[in-house]
Length: 317
Length: 270
Image (cartoon, rainbow over all chains, first blue to last red):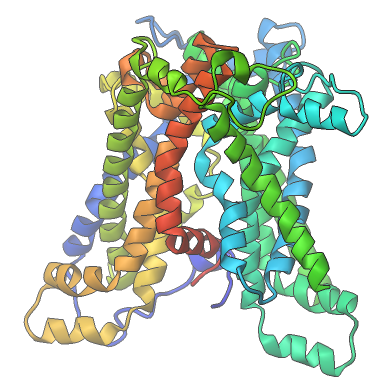
């Protein structure tokens, strides 16, 4: 199995139609595509454009009149004196903190687990299923469960910490920075299996001959890891990094269920703020503008990450 | 080395299994025992009273939510597989003007953060009068770019000769797809159906905001209303969490291989 980036897939030709034994009229292809494209246009492509349109209006879902306001929603979000400024940027900061804290852990811990799992041993599939299991549970279950376990007064976590003689009254869900520890820790617990499974598949994709060659050269385990494993994993690491950044920057359920944004609104994330602004208070124009700002910030981050990975590849060549 | 690995795996297992076990045990405790410090591990007087309560409270009809989620996730999985298989087949095997553009657009949206769609899709769903209905949970999320990408990769690997001989025997495209390609693709279709089911079952933000009535909630969205209705009744919350976990855990145990292989392939081009 070869590994490719999205960009390469984009330009790839399927080995189709070279023999010409199966010729289709274009209408056949479009008929096959039609049901999917109907959904895709209605709920993915059109909304992207429609969201931009909404962001240019003072758009209240419940009111018939939705006056055009140009870039005012954006200006307000960028103007420190406006009422929407503090709430939005506070939530962007929360999302930034969460992303910066969680992404490195969600790369390093799953990679370490994948390296252990890449050796052959009895019961390997059972272990893999166990650490993957939380991922299938969904954020509502995970959020409620950990809210209970992390409860400052009756939670098991504080009880266990107390047993080893440390303070047993940490306010995990109502103070920062403790709440960041709780939110990041729970997210790592919940999703590391997902990343570990992808890393493991990437490890198994590295040609065995490369390890053989390193062994013949007498390379140490550390050098083998640095010069064979890591370069071999680069495309997979890029993919995992990108998807983890996007997932972390869209964190909602953990904060909604475990801290409800507390203390104050310090752990209320950007998507939480956007959903409350747009779908609770029905200031949809402002919320749509905010989601465009968040998306542009995310795309800029993705481009930087992508360039960093590409740059490193260049150095090696 | 082996001892190190064993102890590492032991700690790992403990970290992942014990919270779930504690959730299960707590759901069989009385209200008082669930909130007791120091906490008990095993229920001293095992009771079903938490389940009894959540099954019969009118503002938190957990069994109804269960049925809603089961229906929505199954319908969504079927819709995803049906539409993605058709589209992926056209993209894998047919030559037509615009193919590259269509595929490029679909792949590009794999990297579009979902936040951009929330506000406009709420407005669209509102105009279709789908708010507070399960259709809002089933249909919009069925535009699954990953599904098309995933199945296209699978179809590209199938030997073309089978389709060509069917074609020589007089089968048309549709018959070739239906009789040759789909039966050969059962594992891939099952994997996609499972992943779509799990994703829909676990979806949270969207149902929290588009569903309002207690009887229309999905389980995941309902759990958050269970929490606000019973903020310190951990016996009830854990019983609700157990109910929400059972189907996905059972499905995962039965079809573990498909789920994990589906996920691991998402980072690779097959």
